Length: 425
Image (tube, rainbow, N blue to C red; front, side):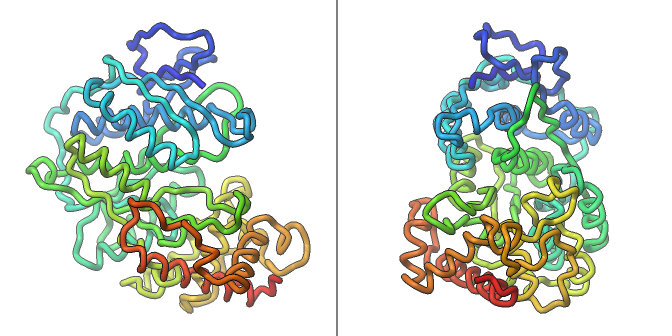
């Protein structure tokens, strides 16, 4: 699929089948896509002054998320893997052309698609704001409305860090993001941004590229801090439990595989290398890479606040699909339910659509994700953990393998306890 992405002033001869995507503006025609107009408005309204290459990275991320929406997986030859060919207008095309391959490789890992990126002059770079505001926070934390990011923000604040909370506005979670930010410490400086990516026609639902946009929002904010302006590096915290981050293959096929690789160490390492090459002094960190979700809950620094707010957080991979209720049966929901059991902080009153996982029908124990976890547990019991895990930690970009391996084993133990309590067989 071919896309041409840039401001409405960007001119490039288009192939007949290319989708024109207007960045930082409105589409202007029914056969065009658009993304980023609201982001630009919010950043300028807050008088934040991000680094120029952070703006370029945002242009790239917005182009990628729009492509992710536009390319339907069902139309690909294998029903999954898509091919994207994207021309993107940036302010520094010479630099980004040298990063086209590393970026494409990072995207291929993130979305399991094939990407070709080309960069051109004509990208949007706003004029510096008058009386720029440079927030005094010493780090940035992504605050999604999920349980892991809630714990991360709580722990950072308890440790004495002053975190600038950045959210990607998602329908059903926006109010939670505001409430969580307000309740942590004496209230976090909080900025909500929305990519507003739109393409004509039916949109793909898997949205694996959303991770790049969210992290890029964090990079954009980090380069606007006083600390960054003073020449120092800024930590960007992407808080996710290690089991979900590693995305272990539950079965030999795609059945039951987790839907995102947002915090996978290989993706974060690849993206960090691009940031380093760009001279963007932002260090991506996941403090919970070797922790299970249950361990995150048990070790949270403010148990009273966590007890009050945890049940309101979102973990479900199908949250919007079920009218903003958590399904209870997808892999992220199972990990969440297992973590609540391991925590022991009180009953899990989330109110799942499919509660009794052991019920013998297609909606419960027969559902793909529930069967996949059950099959993984059975495979470990029959063949051993090492055989089941295979090469999941084999990437040369993954360090500390022993700690990660032990964490995955503990994560499976949490799931085993959940399935046992629910009577899944």
